[in-house]
Image (cartoon, rainbow, N blue to C red; front, side, top):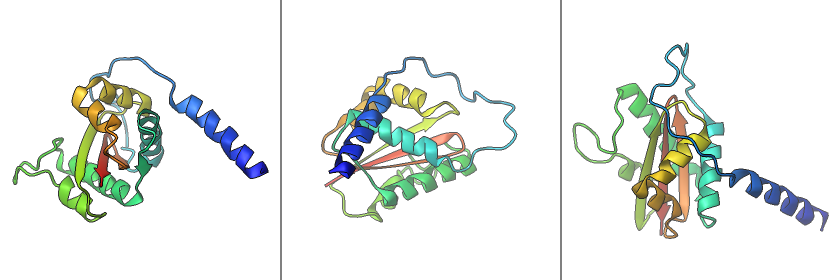
Length: 160
């Protein structure tokens, strides 16, 4: 009984924190020109983006496999100095093949963000975009993976 009450108290506190609305416009990229070394693996930022997404869509669940794929997708875009849903050579979104390695999904979507801003600022920018917002709130997506590398974060949505 004590564990259940503690869990409910913690979840209630987290829900209040994660659903706080922040309003500010997205600054021009890059925000930190004098940054000495890139943050290569920002799991804290990825987890925070997930928490904010979960506030918008309570049924969505974290997928470790999709998160790994999202991280590799973000990393490749940074290394290739490319930011697009489509591969410049093939014209195909490589995320679809990456996501299929995590299961057989009936539907899938991808949100991309870039910039050194806090997760709340990036999430708010996504929510102001109708197509990105649609992915976040769509009840047909049951799983999401979020990965961040340097200045790019990728959200991969999947549903059965």
